[in-house]
Length: 194
Image (cartoon, rainbow, N blue to C red):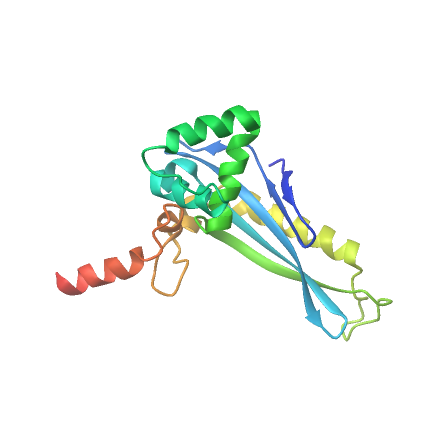
C-alpha cells in the first residue's frame, strides 16, 4: 500500500491510500499519527489504522461529517448540491475531504493502534540495554508499524478484522463505518426480547 499525506497539523498527520474495493463497497485505509506528550520529558507517537467508506456512511453520515466542518446547513435536500459545489471548488481532492470529514466526525472503524515512545533529551540506555529513541526514530518506527498493520488488517484478514467488536457494547467495524455505534446494543436488546 502506498500512503500519501492528506492532512497535517502541528501534532498529527493523516495518511491514506487510494480507494480499495474488494467487491462490496469502496473504502480507504487511513493512518493517523499523533504526537502525544506523556509528561516528565517523555513523549509518544500514537498511531491508528482506520477504515472509512463514503458509501457505507450514507447520507446521514455525510451530512454529519460535512456539518462538523462548518458546512452548516447541509441537509438531505441540499446534500448533492453541496457535494457538487465541493467537487467544483476542490477538484479531485473533494473525496479526500469527505473521507477526512467522516474520520473527524468519528464514522470509521479502527483496525489497529499502537504507541512508540521517545525522549527529547539525550537518549539513555534502558533496562534492556537498548537506547531510548529520538523523536525522528520514534516517528519512523510508528509509521513503519502502522503501515505493516494496514497491510495485514486491511489485506488478507480484512473481513475478520471488521467482524471484531470495536466498543464495549459489541458494535463491529461494519457497524461503525456506517456510523451506527449502538448496533451492538440494539442486537443485544433484540436477542433479549426475542
